[in-house]
Image (cartoon, rainbow over all chains, first blue to last red; front, side):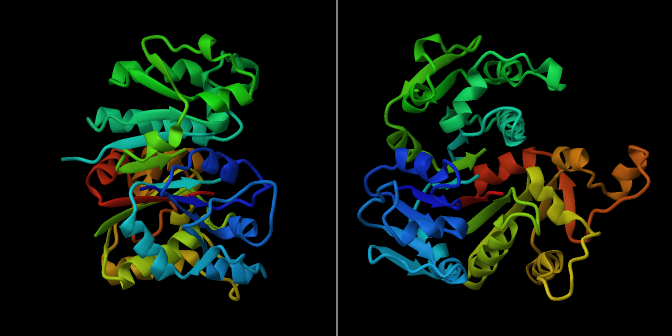
Length: 93
Length: 119
Length: 130
């Protein structure tokens, strides 16, 4: 199952939109850098129900509080996610 | 066995060099006998349109894409919805020497690969 | 497990290079190995020896170099992308008759074949966008 990684804010471009359009059941989504802004409030897009993660440091840096459905992880857990999934797909600017 | 590789192209030509540098990487992989599958999605589908970039002093990326079949990449996958969203008639898409394969479900397609190179 | 990292972001420009560094450290700390870090597109600027950030900002070049020394990391800069952007080794600068070289110690220039090979043989490949 695929690990999708998005680094762009939800309204800053099409990265999250393109990612969600290629999301398959059972895939995981990791929000990093500016994409953590997608993790705190209802926005124009709908995130999948589960297996949604965000880098805690990136959210904290931006003062973003994560919604309950989003799991905060550190870099070590990110590496574990990569080990558990294949392929890893990055969606960026 | 070597990994299966997908090249995911989602940048429009000219505005971002990643469109051209993505193609260069694709051809390099193919030249090394690591022939990648290629999927154009999002703004990447714009790469397949007819182009005349002479006045902006660029080389036609579309013309360079036509090298792919010569490197053994015979199927060009295109996200059908990305094209339709951008008002591109999917039945008009073509690339000399290659077969255009329209995908309705890119998620199911992507998950079958070992590695994905994003451009 | 063997990881390959592909870095597209220029340092001190977008966050991608700094994020890649954090990921590289975590990967090594978890006991995995890094087969190669491949710097492509604007990411080639990470290999510039001439970066001189203010003292109170993170020194990305220095961090990559010490990680390279500690773990014998393969830090490969795409030669074609580097030439376009003015990142040259001593021999390339001579060959192209340019006034100076700026490839940092610990980094090496190589062709895109190194990306293809790394993708083919690594257990995981992860890209860091600009």
